[in-house]
Length: 358
Image (tube, rainbow, N blue to C red; front, side):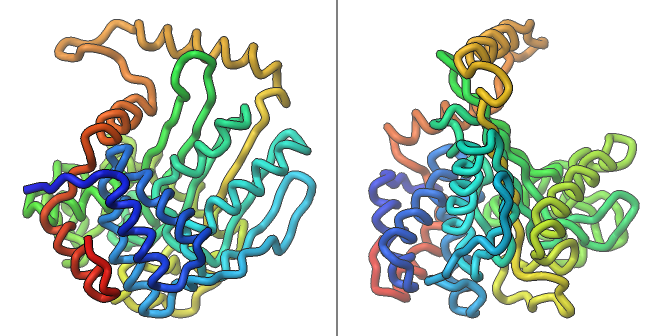
C-alpha cells in the first residue's frame, strides 16, 4: 500500500526534521532539496526513505549538524574539501559549487571531498553544472557491501557515478548509476515488500548466487555491475574501484572496507586510514573545448539521432539517459509522491521524536 504526499508536504516535514537536529536554515533547506530530488525523480531508495537513517547517524554522533566545511588544499583548478562530518546532502553541494567556480576561471574544476556522509543521489549534484553551460560529474564511495569479482569479502560500496551534459532544445543528458548490478536502496525496497531480488543482484556468504533480499544480513554481498565474471562483473568492479580511489584515496577519506557504514547500529571499522566518506566532483566549461552553442546544437543532434534508433521487438522507443527520471518528475510534481506504508510508518516515528507531524 502507498500513500500520496505532495512535494510541499514532504518539503516542510523534512526541513523541520533537519532543523530539529540542529541544522541552520540554509543547511536544512539545502539538505531537504537534495534529498527530495530523489523522490521527485523516482529514485525512491535515496529520498525520504533515508531520512530516519540520517537522524540515527546524528544520534550516534557520526553526523555534525553544524559543520565548518572548508577547503584544505587547492590549486587554480582543483581542491580538497573537508566536510567536518556534515550531512553529505550539505557538503556535496558546497563542493560541487567549488568545482563550478574553479571551472569559471580555469575552464575545468575538480574537487575531492573527505570527512563527509551519504550525499543522496549523485545526479542532483552533477546537474548543478547544467545552468552554467558546463558538464557536471559526481561520484561517491559508500558502505562496503560489494564483493569484488572472485571474492566473498565485502570491500566496496555501490559507488555511483553521475554525468550531466547540457543540450540546446533537447533535455539534458543525465546518466546516474551505481557501479553494482543494483543499488543497495533497491534491495531495501524489496526487503520492505518481502520480495526476492532478480538473479544477479546478490551472492550468499559462500559466493553462490542468491535471490534473498536479506542476504547481506547473513554474510552475503552485493555484486558488481555485470553480476559475475562471465557477464562482465570485472568491469563493474573496476568502475567501483575508480570511484573509491577518486573519492577517498585522493581526498584522504576512508576507502574500501574502511568506509563508514550508513546504518548507525553497525560499528565503525577499526584502523580507518582516512576521515569519513569521500566524494569527487567535476565541472567542465563547454567553451573550454568549443563554442557552447555549437556544442549544444550537436548534443541536440546526438540525442535526436539516438531517439530515432530502431527499437528492438517489444520496445516502443530508445531512451536517453535521464528520460525516465525527467518523465517521472513531471508526473510527481503534478500528482504527488507515493510513499510505501512501511516508509510512512518510519517517517511518523521520526516525527514523533521531535513532535513534528507528517
